[in-house]
Each structure stands twice: as C-alpha cells, then as structure tokens.
Length: 212
Image (tube, rainbow, N blue to C red; front, side):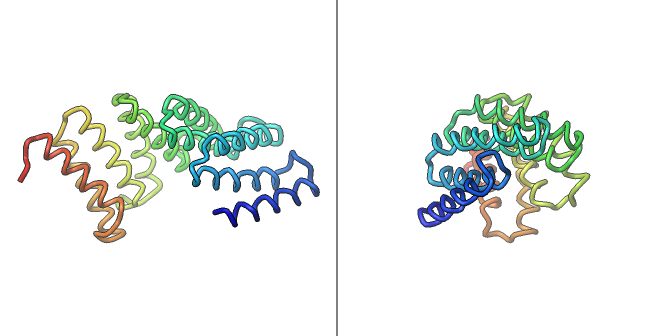
C-alpha cells in the first residue's frame, strides 16, 4: 500500500494545483488516501481525511447529497473498525437519513444503510433495533434482488445472529441455513460467507447442548 499511497499523494498535489482545495477531484484523491489509511489500520489519519472530505462535499453539494452520505458511511466504517460503535451508529444514522431523502425508503442503497446500522446495533446488543432494520433491509433487497442474491444471504445471517443472541435457537438455525444455501449456490462451499454461517450454526448448536 505504501507505493499506492505515494502515487495517490502525487495525484492529490496535482489536483490541488489545478483546482484548489475545494474541488471534487481533490475530494476523490483524499478519499483514496483515506481508504489506504483505513486498510493500514491508521484510523485517526483516515478519520481526519474523511472529515475533511465531508466538509468539502457539503460545501460543494449541500448536506442532502449521496456523496455526503457515502462519506458519513466511510467514517462509520472506520469507527466500527476501532470498536467505537456509538460513533459508528451516529455516522450510519446520518448517512441513512440522507439516503432516504435522496432516494426514498426502498432504494437498494437505503437497504444497505439499514443493514450497516443493524450490524452496529447488534454489536451493542440492541437486538430489537437491529432486527427491525434487518427486516427493513431484507424487504427492500427482496424487491430489488433475486431471492438467492448474496446480499439477501448476508441479511439472513444478520437476523440469525439476533435470534442467537436472544436465545431463539431454532429461528437462528433456520436463517443461518437460508444464508448458507444461497452462498453455496452462488459461490460454492469454499467461501467466507459460508464459513461464517457454519460457525454461527455451530455456536447455536453448542448453545443448545447439541455437541455431536
């Protein structure tokens, strides 16, 4: 990533000379650098840049803009990577509110925002809130995707994790199985999504005392 970072910075310098600080190309170059920082685990640096990008995009486009929502989501992803789920929740909520205003409540990107926020609720043991948003996400995804789409499988897995956390093991097993069936159909057995669901099912069976 160090070589990519050097080139992204050179590109940023050129765009600043050509356009000044407050330009979409400069925001894009900063976004590339921030994503490298995030990948490297340099979360403070990534957040600093994403906040700068957000300010630029709000200045260029106003608050109710898809690019602004995307930057809030990027910041939320960094906070989640840090384990700072309270801040991640705030950023996902801000991004979600904007996406609903831009696209309406049933757009695929809104479904993704619901899913992201549900994941953060789950990590905070806010099971009721998580399930509500997983169900909203699933309903939208089933309208925009086929029933055997990987995004649908991910949502089934999220819902299964909520049921597992609540001790509703049979419901959890049913949804883990749905997620597995879709991912095996799409990707085959040797896929991370399949592995995650198998591990989830195994932990449910263990919780039921079904060790064999």
